[in-house]
Image: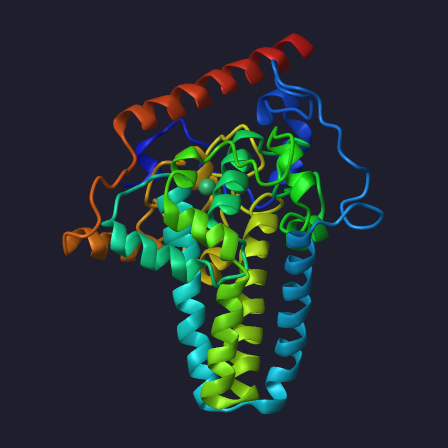
Length: 347
Ligand SMILES: [Zn+2]
Ligand SMILES: [Zn+2]
């Protein structure tokens, strides 16, 4: 599929989309606002997301793990060896796929189906990526799509700054719950289907034991170098690539689709995050299992889903439909019409 098939699309290489953002009327480029959506209670958030607030035990465990993996990663270059390095690469790929293919495309967006045994295996890999347990992640990500670019977006974006996107969202349960419209941390109102499955409840309640057990196994197997590379460096790289994706993908890059949000495409983020950097495409078509929509937009996660479909393991794979294309075409045509009429009125 080529975007050139759709003559109405802005096929501009808008690296300078911030400039466009400033010149096009804001109600067209960003229809979402920071006001509370109709019918929902206003947010009563504490001012600071880090200092001077209540920390629950999960918040403390999350920040401790975050500190531990960074300290271990800092030690890793001093104990470099090819064995631990290769283990870190393999574990990094497995846990990264657990997030992109498992947590994100399978659980958050239901872009395809897998047999339960394979679903649970891939999700279990994702549970070692230091992105919290599936219930927390999916609940938060669903809210990200619902409240993109508003103060309620729990994973951040341009309104929240780099540090909140990097470490704020996973170590402040009450703050994230309030943004998701919940009265307390752990309510997870957006994922009843996960709460109904024992596997996800088990992972939620035992979450921190799993990376701890893996760290212990690595240490028993090969001592400190395996711990430093297999847990520390691998954990930091996976976490930082994922955080980079959520921050950069809403602050700079190309915007081939006229989404009513700040989402962008970045080829280099896509390379680092197994295809998740085609984020403007993803916000345009959240259900699509394929994020790299053009032939040249390499999307490793999609290649894996294609393979799983080929061997009969992935079924009901969702792709861009004609209705999706028509929806985007009409949205672009109407916003262009609105812009033209505003410009005409000003003249
Ligand atoms: Zn996004
Ligand atoms: Zn998503």
